[in-house]
Image (cartoon, rainbow, N blue to C red; front, side, top):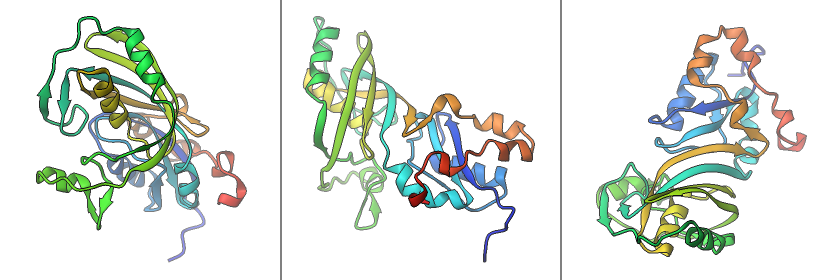
Length: 242
């Protein structure tokens, strides 16, 4: 069935709250914009907040281009507790003492060594599929399978604040980078291990969370005002990507 000529069309920037999935946001936008043609340009875990680039109507054609763009995140790692999921949604499987002499300088030095091109192995608690089965489903059954490392690039990895046992940081990275795995690897490199306790996406390509609307704000608008929030895809995507 051909879409209605009055179908809404464009890119919607949503500030996702904690505790819901990216698919939950897509379903909510479908209801708010009265259309089934809604997609996204990169998911966030339920624990994470921040920028979700939602595609409505014909803008769905731009999914691959927008998904391939670099992302920027603010995050917090907690040292001394290792979880099975590498983040706060998982179970603590090991604890280690945090060195009393651990300093911001130690952390910055370790971060500097993790910049640039590299290969990263996806965590077991992830949506990546092996033979059609999401890894997290296997992980929940206690299974661990071999995963192929993927190429990523970390453009920026800077410490913002350190208050033992937690450190705040900013990271700019390519598509497909697991920030919780970066945090996990950083904590192991330093020594005590650790896991991600907060994650907020602030930038995706040319889109910024400062321009995003919350679901509550969208819900409070009337339908014409909601549609007016849609950004034309051509503002963010080359014409040959549409």
